[in-house]
Amino acid sequence: MDIRQKSAVDAIVIGAGIAGIYALHKLRNELKLEVRGFEKGAGVGGTWFWNRYPGARSDTESYVYRYSFDPETFEGWPWTQKYASQEQMLAYLNAVVDRHGLRPSIQFDTRVTAATFDEQRGVWSVQTSDGAVVEARYLIASVGVLSKLNAPAIAGIDRFEGRQVHTGAWPHDLSLEGKKVGVIGTGSTGVQFIPAAAAVASRLTVFQRSAQYCVPAGSDQVPAEFIQDYRANFDGYWDRLRQTRIACGFAEAAIPAMSVSAEERHRVFEEHWQAGNGFRFMFGTFCDIAIDPAANEAACDFIRGKIAGIVKDPATAARLSPTQAYAKRPVCADGYYETFNRPNVALVDLKANPIVEATARGVRTADGREHELDVLVYATGFECVEGSYREMAIRGRDGALLVDHWGSRPCSYLGISVHGFPNLFMVLGPNSVFSNLAPAIETQVDWIAHLIDRSEQLGQVVIDTDSAAEQDWTGQCEQMAAYTLFPQVKSWIFGANIDGRPNRVLFFFGGLAAYRERLAEIAANGYAGYAFAPAEATILA
Ligand code: FAD
Ligand code: NA7
View: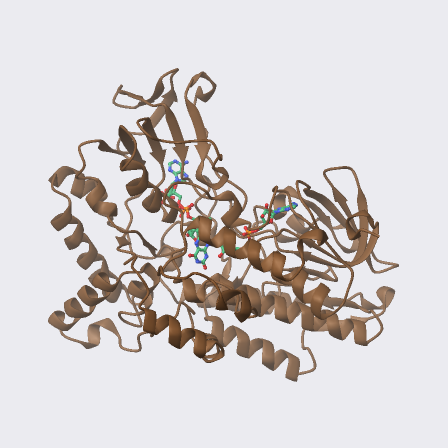
């Protein structure tokens, strides 16, 4: 029988991005469970299915932004560029899915709307947008940290006769060739989109709320010798990567910025500026850019100097120069600041001159000017981490709603489990590791599969996590975040990109190596914080 017709299976996987694909493979092909996948999109790929905007690409280097579990697909993969484009990422993920025969297990165009835990039977009852109800013992939520779109409310937007698009739901049929384009947002997406759009649009108006510290990406060909060495020593590369914090493949700095002379600091910054990559600039130059205010200000000063040197119009350069700490997720793009020297590009500073309303022909700013647009692009990001959970009614013990359990402080044990929601496993749930996300996802899915395997060995018991473990983990994440400069700035990594939302801690800043060590300790310590027991017997304090 087609697995997609079964109303009871061992496990359900929600989402078919990097995480969902791997979870399906792990549970179905390795643990030999019956697994049904649901994906609201029409195909696999998640982020790389949805984000088709011009310029879209990973900004983690290609050789570490993929699966380590599947050297074979990569073996024959045509690979020349340092960063994979959206098309290449999507093609790669589709190839993995087909190579492992996963497609028949996934039901596309189907959204999971609700999931309720039956305490007596230890079973999740999952409802989908097509009205079906499917039961499973294990529920894996791989719904993405950057999956629920965020867009500003613009007064009178219904009047606008042009086209509106979000970069995270880019339509297949839209070309910007020769069009008057407006873009709101200058985050990771905006800085990729802006140079690409400026090259084809007749006019590009950039509506900037916050100026951005953007370093070059250093997009380039990968040297053939490196590719050869990597293919020959695949496992060694990944083993070393898992011993690092940010897991982006570059050497992480061990020297504090202020321990060297000003000349040496400048030399190191310049070397990394030339090499490119945002994470490398933040974590490969000096070890304390994200911790020590003086080190951070030195990096800011260097980047501001670059902006002043690149952007010809001093007023534009000033508007592009951030004043706050360099403490958002670091971004990179080639030719970002240079784009503002083009005659067809204009910059609007929304803090000084906000959009007040939409008109039939465009948008009007507070200075009274109407900006004529054929297309208005929202590069305004996502309701991150918790956003996709807010779109599903997930009910655990006593009918408690997950989002109520979280309130304004999303908590978890290890970013994976939540007290009172047994056998629910999140991939990249609140307080997962802040790093290159591909190896973080593999780490979590391996752990989830390990727990499920153990439950199966113990006689298909229910796995719950205790409240103390959840609170302890969440508290540790908060303490670690407070040690860094990240909470000083409002950004998506603290959920504060959404208007009116305060900062809340959503990531573990201890790094991938420490996170993996913690998992190993927990396993060695009798799975501390977890209980494995028959359904009615697992109710934990
Ligand atoms: P996603 O890829 O977001 O997949 C989640 C899937 O779940 C989606 O397909 C969604 O449709 C589906 N879904 C959600 N809710 C439901 C529901 N209720 N029912 C059914 N299906 C549902 N990270 C890096 O580490 N390096 C990078 O260079 C990088 N670049 C990025 C560039 C962009 C433009 C964006 C947006 C993100 C980038 N990221 C990057 C983060 C990226 O999201 C992760 O690296 C990774 O792709 C996440 O995979 P995932 O499977 O966890 O989630
Ligand atoms: P980000 O990084 O959240 O950036 C969104 C941008 O949109 C950022 O410049 C925001 O300004 C701006 N924004 C958000 N809401 C508004 C409103 N209401 N008005 C004006 N401007 C707004 O999202 P991205 O898609 O760029 O990147 C997300 C992740 O995807 C990224 O880190 C990578 O992992 C890939 P702000 O800075 O908040 O003032």
